[in-house]
Length: 92
Image (cartoon, rainbow, N blue to C red):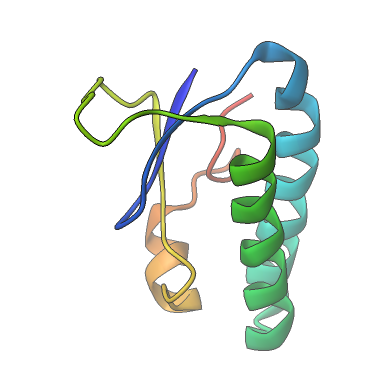
């Protein structure tokens, strides 16, 4: 799976890491539902850091279609709410 972090780049994520990323996505959804900006920022940061640490960065000159696009760390709670589905940012 190819995940893009807006303004940063693309990462290749193996299936082995999807359960952990889905857990972090659920925490992000919960933080967004609680309307707590600080908790939300912490949850978003944790999800993005997990993508960075679990994923293999693709070279900048390699552009692949992204399976999933994640907001950057400066994205507000209001902006992310517009992106969230019933399944969070990461389907599954």
